[in-house]
Image (cartoon, rainbow, N blue to C red):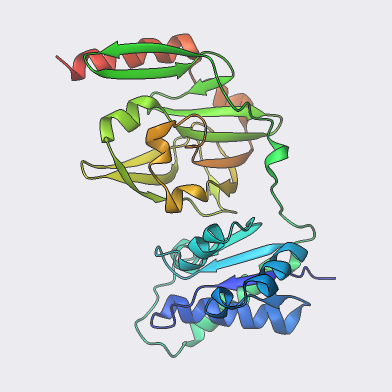
Amino acid sequence: MSKSFAVLPCNGLDKAAGCIAREIALNILENSESEMICPVLYRIADARYTKIAQEKPLLVIDGCQTRCASKLASEKGLKVNIKLMVNEEAKNRGIELGDSLRLREKELKLAQDLVTELLKVKETEKVSESEIVYPETHDYEVYQKDKFIFRVPKEGFLFNENDSWVYISGNKARIGVTDYVQQSLSDIMFFTPPVVGSEVEQFGELGTVESGKAVFEVVSPVSGKIIAVNEELSAAPELINSNPYEKGWIAEVELSDLESDRELLLDFTGYFTILKRKVDEFHV
């Protein structure tokens, strides 16, 4: 039996990607016992659609980087089980989307292929926070230079030289950026998440964070499958400034080759030494 979902598509029907998102949603409804959450009516039928989202695994379908469906889910406090971004899926498959709102053969095939893959999954890819045992607070070592204070957690974390951290729990891990990143960028204004369900290699891109100064590409410390992103950052990217190790985390992954990945990671002592050197060189 195929899976069933609560399907929340984007409402950007003025773009080809939005039209494909709608096509995917309709195909899923026709071929499973899924239910639709209308992004337009949700605001006036809150109780009804929230109930649907609580009863079935929530599939969010975004057309493009605007991520209007993801933002609506975050606004309503919904737990997203699977997230799909049409633009990213098209790019990964070498398909160039046109400007026409009338879907062509290749775009209809993309929609059908994605529906087939979604409905063939045997088990819900539900990710609950309890699957990763993550402490609420940490013991930090502090390095101060002028008015800037840089913190590094002493235990439980590994780092790469690209200023990203990973906290491992079983075969899963949570990933984020260090204090050095948020201090260097200053006020962070935008967060572009990776695509849930996609694979990332060690040192591959895991989304971006952006301030008025620069765009920073998050470099993954480990390889694996992305199983969750921090939805709160879509509405409040400044959480990375507040504390990048706690509420400002970036993504969670299911690890695929931790034994090999560890060889290129740093413990607290190794990273703290590099951090101090970077800070001293920057402030010379």
